Image 1 (spheres, rainbow, N blue to C red):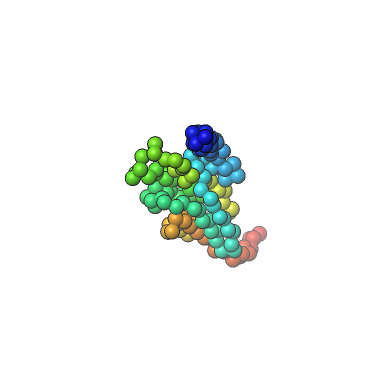
Image 2: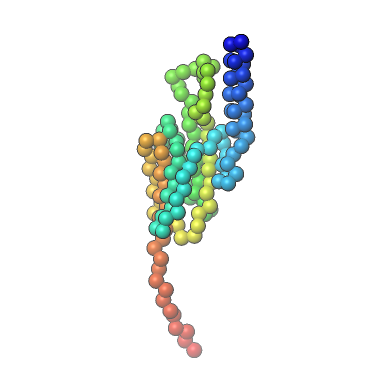
Length: 140
């Protein structure tokens, strides 16, 4: 009976891995081997994004503004201290990810900041200061 349980677990793991790679997050333009969980807040003076990226090296995370979009991408490497063939269960994804978010008008490209700590990437996108309206007389 134990052999059937092990076979079932192996089949489930293979299906989870295969299906996870076929289901990118459509609402955010996801792509890659996995998709990190994201919280996105729209505040009066900024947009705040937090992404769960535990176990990643900040050097493997790329944050950029591109054609009015915030683009997050990166690669989580498999653990180097164990042979993947010895795994009984793998639930923590590794490989590449890509997430895209359309940005509203008024984001200051110079005011974007990103930090990583405790397994969480935080991106702050500041809004541009509103300029005062000035009436310009028309000469006639």
